[in-house]
Structures are given as C-alpha cells and as structure tokens.
Length: 459
Ligand code: CO
Image 1 (tube, rainbow, N blue to C red):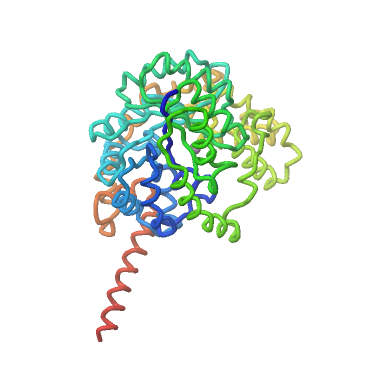
Image 2: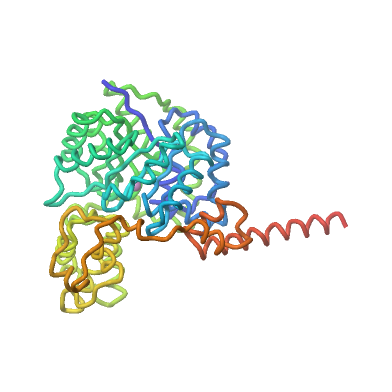
C-alpha cells in the first residue's frame, strides 16, 4: 500500500467555500503551530479569493498575511493561481505575471497550483516557468469536466504536454464536486500509467461524492488529496481530514498524520465555525449535500446563480427552459469547463437566450471576448455561425491573448502613486486597482492616527 499525503484547505478553500473567505488572520494565527506540526504535505493558505478578500473586506495586506504564516510554518505553503489571470479576473501581461509569481515565492509560497479555466496550457506557461525559476513546486491542475470532446485519452495527451512544460506535479481539480468515483478511478489510473509526476486530487463535498471519489482516487494511485479539518468540511467545502486519515490508515495506507494533533486543530476551529453560524456568515445549507448538480450536469454554484438571476427578473418559472438551454450554449462555445468565470458567462447567456425569445439576439461583452479568442482556445470548436454573428468577417485571435497586451508593471507603478510603498503594493494595485487604493488609504490613516495617539499620550 502506498503512502497518501494530505493538503489541509481550512485556511483557503474551506474558508472560501463556507465563509466567503472572511476569516481574518488573527482568528487562526494561534493555531498555525499545531497545523504545522500535524504532518501535512502542504497547507493551502493563499491565493484563490484570499487576496481579494484581505484587501476588500478584512483590511489586511495579503502579502503581510503570507509572511506572518511563513514565520510560523515549516510545512510547505501552497497557493492557487489562475495562470495568466493571477488572482484577478482578466489576463495580465507576462511581466506582471512573472513578478507576481516571483514575489509570491519570495514572501513564502513553496507550492503553486496553477490552472486555466479553459485548460489552455499556453495560459500557464509563463507562470510555470517563473515558478520553476524560483525553485518552488509548479503543480499544474487540469479543470475537470465531462463532454463529448473530453476523454481520458485527451486528458492524458494534455498531461504529456504539461510534463514537457516542466511541471513538477499534477492535479485533477474538480471545483464543483461532480467527479464520480468511477471517473476518477479511470482517470488517475490512466495518468499514473503515463506519468511519474506526483498526482494530487481536489474535489468538493457538494454532491456527496467526495469521500468515495477520494477513496477510488487513492486506490488508483493518487499521492495527495485535499481535505478540510472536520468542522470546516462538507457541503461546498472539502471532505473531512480526520475521516480520511482514519479510514485510509485502517485500510493499510501509510499516512503520517497524527489524529490527536488533528483533534487539537478541530477543537480550535469549532468555536470559529459556531460564531460564523451565529452571525449568519455561515449558512448551514452550504454544509449540506445537494445532488441536483448531478441531474443537471452543471455545478451547484452555477445553479444557485441562475435561480437568483431569474428570481430577480421575475422569471423563475422559466428555469426549466434555461436549464435546457445551458448545455446548448456550452456546446456552441466548444464545451468549456463550467468554472469561474465561464460558468457565469454561459449561465447568463443561456438565460438571455430564453428570456429574449431568440438565441444570441444579445451577446454579452464577455461571451463576445471569448468568441474573439481572448480567453484562449476552447476544448472543442465554437459554432461557426456564432463566430460570424459576433465577428463578421474578422478572424478570431489564434495567438495567446497576453501577447497582445502592453507591459503593465511600470504603468501600474505610475498609476498606483505614492501610497504604494513597494513592488508588492504595486502588484496588489495592478490586480485590484480600486480596492487596493482604498486599502492603502486606510493603512495610511491608521498609521497617522497611531502617531497622533502616541504624541497625545506623551504630551
Ligand atoms: Co476547490
């Protein structure tokens, strides 16, 4: 029986999935030592929505948060990076991407999980190369989806290309919790027969498949699974760490994690979870099982967005039509994986098509950019009629979109102005200009008040 390792997600994905990434550093700083001592392969603690949330809601400098975690932890620190999108929602120029990766590693990141919503590997190349240059682990993740153009053979072909890119580890990333035990078994087995790279599997408990999916993944040879300490597990979060440690040990796998240590960590987070339930930040429904995504073949989060959108437009009675239109729009788009931002784009377009009574009478700005090739190459082919409708006689972009962008670092420095004190601030500004500016102002004010207060005290 092989060794199975764990990545703890309570500080990032579980935090993001259950409490909208609103856990401030001060809430968890006292438990970092114990998390560090538990024997995890890595602690996922940065990237994803944490960066945005630190600046926007928590009045925290995300870079400083990372340095503080690093000062306590020897266990590798892991972040999630959306390739050329970094932690924002558009494509950034290569120079900005390189600097962001460099500063992430210098501030304490050891493992960077890099993915692209379309699995267009060209959007990962720059960040993978830069990660390797700074001697961190470049773990390339494939966004998992099923469609007529997705097959195990195609995934394995992509794995070969990822290996050629120099990636140091692989991940199958199922952001919606729809990957089944049978599917993961075949996929992991196929990858393991073709690649020697360490293989991570990432899923969510949303549809209830998570534990079975991990068990079959491990049986097929997966090396590392992502789990969340039990009181922050389940529902839209990951399967529970303790449960899998317990079960896999009993099955004879080598797991170098001490359950007693996990109990300490869980005891620490329980009151935080209870407080979040009391304040309403944590809705008990997101911790429950919702298998609707399996019937509709769309992620749970996308379904709730559609319901909210139709409710707002007083058209909830048309949900069935929109649900029938969604896979048709996805097909027209060349079967993109339904992950952020594509899930929202496809959902909104499907709703528009139904409510307008004519397909693509209105094409959203985002879908038009997608059709022009600005997000990358889709897995399948975009409907030629639709391309013609949006672009006329122009041809979609075949080059990598980032190559069409002017360099951004110097301009960002100029635009950020004197409130940005170093290159990390400039990067925060480039990715989230308005909210970074607000954060810089608030930081400045706080410091001035502190000085004023101490002068008054002395006086
Ligand atoms: Co996730």
